[in-house]
Image (cartoon, rainbow, N blue to C red; front, side, top):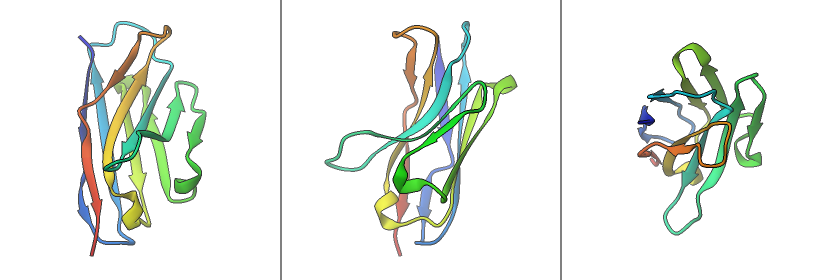
Length: 117
């Protein structure tokens, strides 16, 4: 049973920083990519950042230069460093893991990030 456990969300003032972590367990296959998505109230879930096993990264335009994704392949853990946070970054952030076939697409339970003064 694949499980993704996120941590690190919270309330932060504009301009502040947070670090999200996601640890995957129960992995019995090669992992293609891990990443972070977010969903604000009334909005669709959107990609924030993703990283492949080889280290290639992809970021949403809205977070480029402010967020950094990294990964520890030996621990199947992915991190998201969020800097220069803005109120529009407020959302539930979900960890995602993809394996070598279409059905190997797993989600964490989500962690709330709120940016407010």
